[in-house]
Image (cartoon, rainbow, N blue to C red; front, side):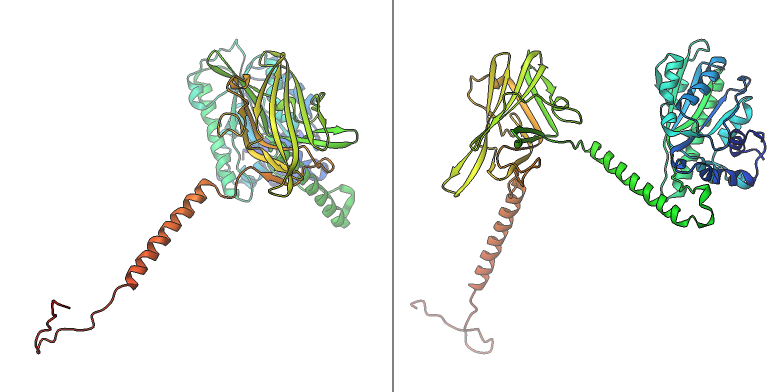
Length: 494
């Protein structure tokens, strides 16, 4: 019985035809991890075929257990595109592994359980399919760039609806990319349903391409593997249980470190700007975003200073900075900011003893912008302050929306500028090592919502207390009328 798995085994062994499929194929794919210890969780399959009636020169698939790298994959693609159609349809799935075909490809002759009927029909109708069962995922994820270089055209990200409105030409190369999702994890039914939906989309695209009567080359692959297989060395034999557990633990630790690294990159965690006086650090600055804007012709022009200030391998110029026990000055020097050849962002801080609180506090006295001989000054001493042994942190420090920084005067050039610092943290005194001290946050303990709730609750308590007091003041009558006796007369003179 015909199946896509037959094509996968034909590519991996080079001995079986596409129309043959048996249970031994599943055993071969399951044993693939044994032949490649340590790399089975880094490979994805790649399937290439042409439209019906178009043939390609025969390409021998790699030997069993061989992993196709970027250069070898580029060679396969170059030979296929050199003699084949220049209209390429790329189905790029988020994740995919050979195990997806063994689980959902109608294994053991269960044709009705296969979720790849359209893909299998396309392979059967093609005279020269190429199935690479094991491609390194860095090579597969770069397949768009390889095709773009060989076709000398930009990729077009499509869907079946827009494809029907596109007119293709056999003489003009085109790279059509269809992104396919993948559902993995413990919910196997969701993965099966998503793969079935992807196969239906492949069928719709191939049907549309057939109506246009334009020859094409189709490729089906993924960006990264969907499953992680625990490998077992061949020389471990029957006594390799300990080695298997050690290998599993090592890979789990590697994956955890990689996950932590990606989380840090996603959260944009990088080292703060650090200014040293001699061997000691005296000023630390960190922010998720630093940006300045200038008003020109009634429109605000913004410039992001973050890429020039923070990040791996970034060393901002700090000449002009200084610090001592009472004053600190951090100067960030930039070039070509909003048309200004020389640009400086300066943080001026000071600390002194306040007798009322009987402790020392530091304040951000001013944020200055120096550009081409002009200075714009924002005053921050009224709002940006913290105990001298703490650092100061605020979610947003701006000069225009709930401003904590205000121009020094109405005539100061700062009125033409805006500054915005997000997730801002600074410390200019009592720095220990290269880490911030405990942060004094700008957000007060009582927010407007909390105050409103407290005032509403207090008003309700007062109303309830007044009502109870009025009820307690009610007095009952001490005399009552007797219907059988004379009526009670109340003298009017009393």
